[in-house]
Length: 94
Image 1 (spheres, helix red, strand yellow):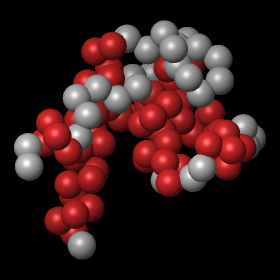
Image 2 (spheres, one colour; image 1 turned 90 degrees about the vertical axis):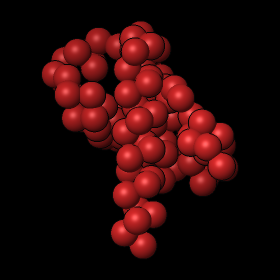
Image 3 (tube, rainbow, N blue to C red; image 1 turned 180 degrees about the vertical axis):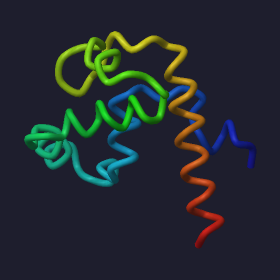
Image 4 (cartoon, one colour; image 1 turned 135 degrees about the horizontal axis):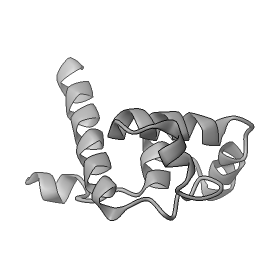
């Protein structure tokens, strides 16, 4: 199985945060509830800034809520790679 079949080539900010925080296994209603928890957006901003080696205020300017709709597309490829690395390292450690 190739990596392209296993992992996405691009990952938007919201999906990356959901995966990283383990929310991808929740049903849609529970997922939306978790995304509305106080402090969740701030956690995502910090995570994205760290994962992309950017300043917090840069990530903050990408939009309201957890959509980050103004995130440049080039960062979606980096997030996909970060997710691949995390997943593969977890697999190797197990």
